[in-house]
Image 1 (cartoon, rainbow, N blue to C red):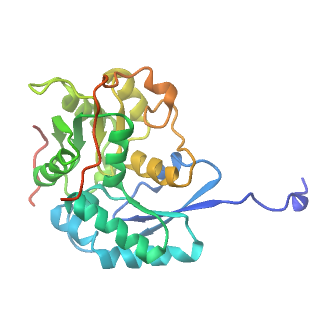
Image 2 (image 1 turned 135 degrees about the vertical axis):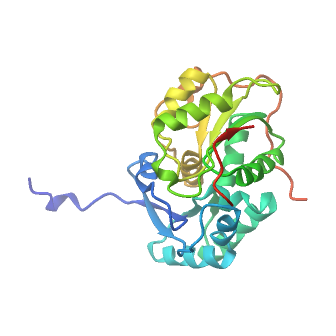
Image 3 (image 1 turned 90 degrees about the vertical axis):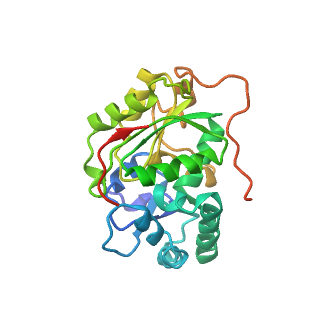
Length: 277
């Protein structure tokens, strides 16, 4: 077949992605991306620290983020995303907004973070009561609980794995088991949604299964990151039977009632054993 008359590939719109140095799920991010959009990934410099609050702070320093965004400017992305959950919630809501501002200054384009995208998703789904799954240690998990609390969201249950490395090796079976534990009705009642935290935690294929079983929306770190970035482009993520990005899937989940849900708030270790709180 002679393709010389076709004029080359169609125009592409770019999303710049800054990921921590140990990010291993590039392929998962791409699964949410439509054909007309390209992801341009770069990584923060290596630091010899295990997954912890210290690492979250190191990989989210403004100078580090600014340098990473500047490496992407040559390919002219229309938006930049910081794909790290703990790195973007470790400084709270004020810190997350400051990260976005630092990235926007460096790249002269809109910027988002995973944790900021999480709050957007909670608003989109009208979530007031949230179950959490994290691969983190208990100390990192507690900071995430505090972050979502600032959005007026109650954590109804939380299952954590206590990992400090190799999070991308967690299996789908382990993710599903933890999700079931976190979403189980406790003394605070049932959750409106479930969040699978950490951009290094594989989640794409388990989301539809968990939504069908738990009857609530299930959102993940990589999912909300791509969803929010593509929103800035005026286009949609690709994710069949995922309530956040597929309206037809929402009919099968138990969404909250009439009351207003989450709101974007005003700005005012050692390895652990897996657990539940």
